Each structure stands twice: as structure tokens, then as C-alpha cells.
Image (cartoon, rainbow, N blue to C red):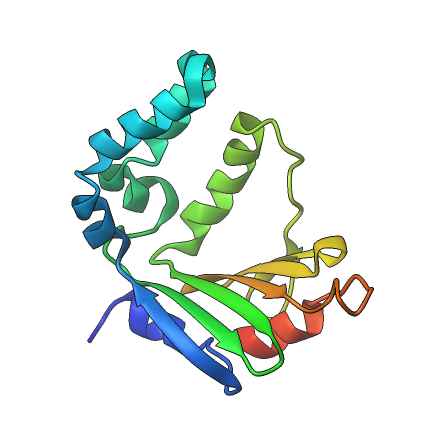
Length: 169
């Protein structure tokens, strides 16, 4: 099988105790399609749904625009894994990482969020979030979000840079 999903599988760690594959396109169809889901979300958001930025984001994330805007296919499976040391990871296959990287600042502006600074690494880029015991890595074939679910119980912030580096190579 060709495409970004099989390439993303290589990032799943050897100590994974479970992996789930989720086809977002199929879930979207079961929800009645993008427009039906969008209508429900906009209704739940309330008056803020009329904000031009919200409407702009909704257009950017339309399934037929994901590949062009972000290098992501709606029918590429989202992979979720859990490891024996209680980390949870989410892998999203990416066909064109450069498109996603270029879109990140625009998304941050639309969300009125702080612009994440992608740090260069060996063959990928990453953003650490040590206070949340999480990290995000953008590789040539996948985006990975990694979370240490036990860090808070251990009473410590965790920098997951080393773990991301091991997984992204």
C-alpha cells in the first residue's frame, strides 16, 4: 500500500501496547458530512460563530481543502497509540509537510494563539511543551503529538524532546 499512512506507521514505538487506526473521512460521513457537522459545531459555538475568522477557518478545514491547505488527506488514517510507560501518541499522516508547516502561523493567528516556534532537529521539526508534558513533531510523512499521561502524578513537568527524537528517526 502506497501513501502517507504506511510511512507514518514507522513512527509507532516498539513499546506500544495498543494502536488504533481511525479513518476521519468515514467518521465524517457517518456524522452526516462536513456541512452537517459544521452546522452543529457553529450552533454550539453560538454568536461567536459569526466571527469572520471562525468562518474562514471552517473553510480552510473543509475536507476537500485539507490536502491543498495542509498536505493532509481526510481518508488517511489517524493512528493513536499507547505505550507501556503510559505515553499516548497521535500520528497524522502528512503527504506534504511543507504545506502544514506554512499553515501553522496562519492557524495561530486565526486562533489568536501564541505562535509555536518549530525547532529544527535531524530530519524533522518539533515544539516542546514541557509544562504540559507534551510535544509535537512534524516529520516528512507525519505529525506526532506525544503526551506523558503520568507526568502530573509524578509531580514534574516533562520535556519529551528525547522521546520525540527517538520516535521521529
